[in-house]
Amino acid sequence: MTSNSPGKGPAHTSRKGPYGIIDIGSNSVRLVVYAGATRSPVPIFNEKVMAGLGRSVARTGKLDEQGVERAIKAVRRFAALKREIGIKKLDVVATAAVRDAADGPDFLKKIAAFFDQEVRLLSGEEEARLAASGILSAIPDADGVVGDLGGGSLELVAVSSGTLAPGITMPLGPLRLEAASEGNLARAGEIVDAELKKVEWLSSMKGRPLYAVGGVWRNLARIHMAQFNYPVRVLHHYVIPQRDAAQLAGLLEKMGPKSLARIPDISSRRIPALPYGALVLERLLAATGASHVVISSFGLREGVVYDGLEAEEKRKDPLIEGCKDLAGRLARFPEHGQELASWTEALFSDGGFGESAAQKRLRHAACILADIGWYVHPDYRSQHAMQQILLAPVVGIDHPGRMFLARVGFHRHEGNAEAEVLGDLTSRLSKEEAYRARILGLALRLAFSLCAARLGVLPLTRLRMDEKCVRLELPKKIESFMGETVQKRLNALAKAAGRTAEVVIG
Image (cartoon, rainbow, N blue to C red):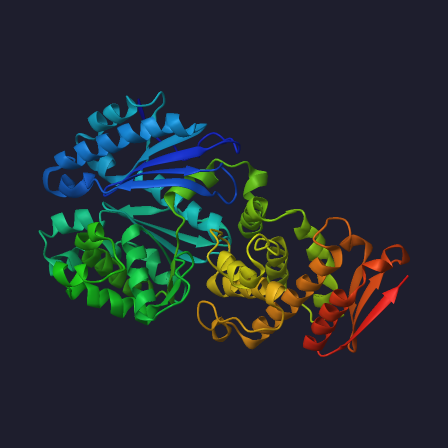
């Protein structure tokens, strides 16, 4: 009950109900359950077992015996969880170690026995394509090279303008590399260099980003965050400058297991693989001339989700969809987002501060998230909203964008005060973006006071701005909505915008 997957993706998946993926990799076996197969999938369960299936493939040509036992035990549990959670659709995929091992087919028969469906054995090219699809699903404007480092292989794909070039796979995963080099890092370096020289197009990636997928590289990013005391411990879209990444990789290559074990930000089970993963990164940076490394939390599994979506769903903005999902769980009226986006438009249209398409997109996202902090104690709402937004499980956004949205959330509750939570984030945004966040936050603060957080009121009013004045217009029938608090917050917005406040009734 196994199949080698063709170039096409799977049949379209249902958006409704829990959707699961079992990913049988060279180093780990993992079950991820999403709330549904959507444009911005939200994990509701995630469990990983470091089985080490591929530990002996390079040496013996077969799967590691202990790894097989651990993997089968894990999958038996995952099959039970499938029934308990009520997963509506499940994909089971296997990658490099199973693909390359002589006993891979026998192993897959044992796995398939737990399910009434085929196990999808990915070719190297398909594995590369799905990893790159995961990147594009989270970073639609990705333009560079995707590198997916698993335990047994490295997949490389060039991405640009939402399209993928044909991918390649190489036997450069840490488990495979350690075995092939017999634990000699110098020899491992020669193996990596020889493989990368075969890829003629790598030199065309000079000056473009390397999008890094894989647990070993995510651990390297955690170390970099700790090294620089970075305040936002969100791995997705974390950027490491080329020089930093190369220096850190070089340092980790030279560290022994005991020294690596003393680093608090890495998994103990990743320690044996870390020097080899660091070596591959260092050599790949040199071969590509990449400008920087972008860490992605999305990869093959999310690529499988994305691959199965309808075309209309794929065209949606992952940031906006993720924000809608979060607001649907936490806001009083999730529909408020569109009202707020329309109501604040005048502040940032040609008659106001002006905004680019990217800035308009962030403003829309901020409006969707404007009410997610309402349910906590008033004294803590600003900090809570800021942290909720800053650490939200959304993609389609870089770290400066997260900080912008978080500052908007803070000012929506706290007005003109300055945020102290999670360090001084002001210095990590341009002055212009920090100012725009303050203005938008103050406008949202005004909006919620004016409409008492109820739907249907804001569309009856208008907020306008010219070079001298911020004007609030209300029809006569709701003039009683004006009050001292509304006036106070209109005045605060106007003052921050360097203008006077005016109210027009009728």
